[in-house]
Image (tube, rainbow, N blue to C red):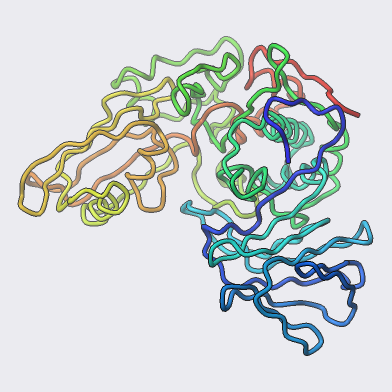
Length: 441
């Protein structure tokens, strides 16, 4: 596993969680490119077999059970597959994509190198261990589509490498893994979307990261900033990162009004500024599906509208905040970040005894979580009440952007690459003051 604060001088291996205990998954099937390409270890026993194209693993009786050649194995704690050929791969099915997000679905994932299947609690933990550069060839076109220009693929690869090696968040260290396979870390769908373009993106940037003051940048990124980037401290920890600034996602010289002012924020969200690299004027929404990731939804990313009934919103507040909400009376964003994202959301509601209450929700992530059961695309929203009387029938959100909006805006970087900007120019735009640095061969 990676170590925090350590800059490697050679390519490291990493451990990626493909199925996590939180998925509560009880079954998974492994399909083999060729069973003879793998050495299989079951607990302490190691053997090789070429007789089966696939194995179904199930959680039963406090262990993992499966059958090979008519022989049943029960109460196994760990199964490990090690490749004996470089071309070997295993297809795992089913695997969650969009874990805990509105785009959640199940897919098959084809992975190279070492695979571990073990029991955690009463659920499966599936881990893919592989070299970092192999992982990165898959990340760029899992996050964005294979049709993207090479400058975007290279920038995405450098940012993904930097984020991995900065190794700040360590969200799943308790599971003995560096990252998971999904949007809470970085999207990794194995060899599914691997292309010559993504291979070249990794090879041409091998060992290259962005640094600031001699440290690898904690290079966060999201799908669309909505036209103006958010700062690190408004989203996560209070300590600012100087290379994550609140700046327009536009060519130099363009300005944006102060979006912490409510009137400016509302006008901004209801407009479609042409100069923004992530604007639908730069990358038309009807052409975007060609460029975004295979598991992304086709739709509007720069500006969008979502409606929710009072009943569904009240149920979501009961679920997410544990409040006794009968009806929502009103919602107002009291404080916004520089990208117009919510930093303080006031919710007024009635309980089941018709008593009025107020609650405050802080930060972008929590606002998105409570405003919609499918996790709202962004918290840079205006909120309109629909219906007569004191209790609205529904609420309408007009929104800007998709994701947290800090660091590299992926659709903005796509817009820059389509306009002919280089990899270095894209990185300098989204991480001002950073240096493009090679740390290993």
